[in-house]
Length: 263
Image 1 (cartoon, rainbow, N blue to C red):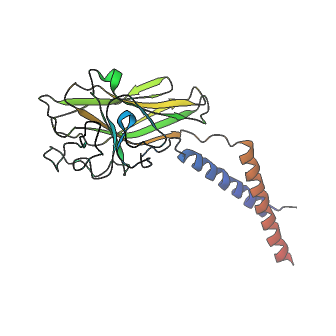
Image 2 (cartoon, rainbow, N blue to C red; image 1 turned 90 degrees about the vertical axis):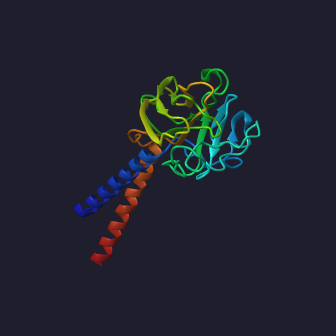
Image 3 (cartoon, rainbow, N blue to C red; image 1 turned 180 degrees about the vertical axis):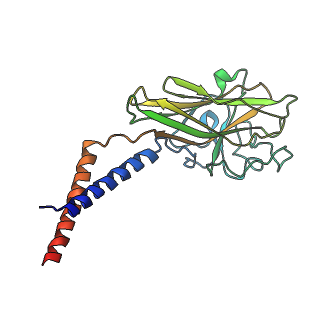
């Protein structure tokens, strides 16, 4: 018979396994490549004019969307666009008003898109999207990301520039505060966080840069995208079985040790 000490040891083992399982679930980011580090051809223009792609993401629409490597925003920028221009931002290295950090708070590459290509950004600004699978209807998920704004190097504006990010998860739509900044300026990085409730087991997560004036290219920046469950999901039957097997092994080891001591 298992004595009290053995029972306590088994209970502790089960509790530790449950805690470990819960912590793992809490930290799981359901977004693929939320930091844009995985690319098909390095940091460069993506989407319809692109020479590279961000793994896991789909970029649609005719406007400019590009990935910038750390330390290149106001120096070398990205690969040439379809106009033959090498895209970069106004910053302290090229006569801009503000220092642009080498990378976003997330580190590594970050995404930049032109919010005013063409005549109205509702129609032609590129849309960035990704399908998220494995959701549980009714469960809550917290979306977090970093965003900022600057201006395309070589262009100037007589008025302040503005832009924001509209983001959606399934049919639920939200929008960041609108950033306002002067000609050749940079806003600094901001953080947005919002908790959604899943209405389907599979939903599209999308981002659209918006709220910008025309013809004075304000550039919207994005990085560090994560979507995590608010609470740990209840373990599946297979997980319970594994935990019980683990508890049994712990019990066996304890009893074996007791037997050696008795001998």
